[in-house]
Picture 1 (tube, rainbow, N blue to C red):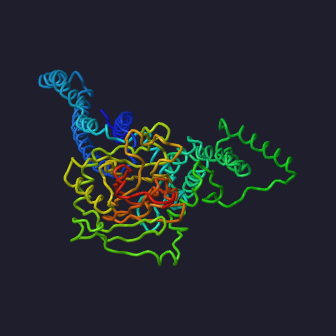
Picture 2: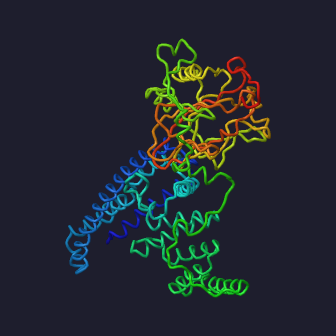
Picture 3: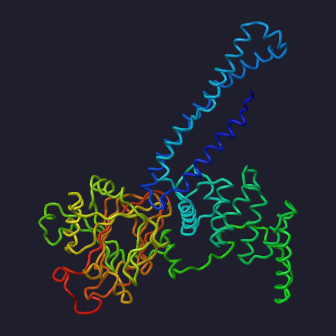
Length: 544
């Protein structure tokens, strides 16, 4: 009996792979949208690694016992087969042969049939419902691409873990980069496919080992480059593919098609052939396709801290003060510190508006309920998920805990607006690349039924609590007038969405920038019109 180390490892890898594949088919979606929930996966993975080590130890113990049996029987059979009749002539040998075949081989069979994997599989079964699935993996890949676009990060810097102001050992391998490119390719996003497939090819050319072959990378890359309209480079890449794999089923046909198409274009434009650029493909080689968002460029520039319209004249109009809520009894002895963030529209920040204790309690209550954040459909008024809002949120009622009631009361005291008709306190956690693209908090005239079910009128104001600091990214930006407000734990910002007339202030269109590094926790209170008639009376003009 011979058991090889290679066979043992092959069996182990096959076993683990089958379990992981099984787990991934029955998972809960969209875990990546919340750092708070993803932290649980870190501890889950640690527990599974420990369970895996225990399984390996049990397998090794079992294998050692089987090897011991094999060595003993190997020595014994060498003697018995040398002279079978002479061996069996001794009555003790005859008895032991009967005993071995009747008893000891059965014991060995039982040993071999023991399955040390039972404990590991049982542990996996407990956790598999929380595992990410293909949608999560795809979402996380798209989040990296979103960060790449917003913060203008090239694929090489990303693959080496070089993010602005952050030093990390987190790197992307050739296979990681290829999978990123393939995710974009499968989504017909050839712009990002080119960037990541090119990075995979570069790392492979630099000598990094990988499972994926160079031919596979060139196959996807050449077609993606063709889709970006760069025929000369597509031809050059396809020629490299043919040189590596002359029998490739698509390469030859693609090469002929690309060459014929290029010749046709050159004839029509009466131009001579120009060889492709020898410069490697990188960020800026191709233009990023336009999308649905008209203010995309200004929004992303503000996220990077560029294009902020804070002039000296404007800065001179910003002040800080103690605010007692117009002599509110609860604020007289301890007024809040108020800072102007912007003059028009007026945006203020309140310092120390939440204590660490309150923040932890809010997170504790919200975390078990976090679900993919929704937006209200402007036509139906029904809440639904959207790709432009990537986070997880939960709603907390004041009756659930005295701290929630206390926070609601504080918001009323500070703003002077009743929260009786306000929406519940919404808690949001932004995960990998978490964002909320430019949007209005109030409903516009073309969506009159947005808040009809609530019966409390439009959203007159927004009170936003920052419950964490963010290492990089995560600003709240207002593209219309070029403002960027950065998260500071324990502070809150407040602005009116409507003029006193009830007309919407379209300047307040704002966005939550993607979180580049860190975890962003916020909570917000959307305050509605009903009940504010005497607290914020109408003005004399439409824009008062």
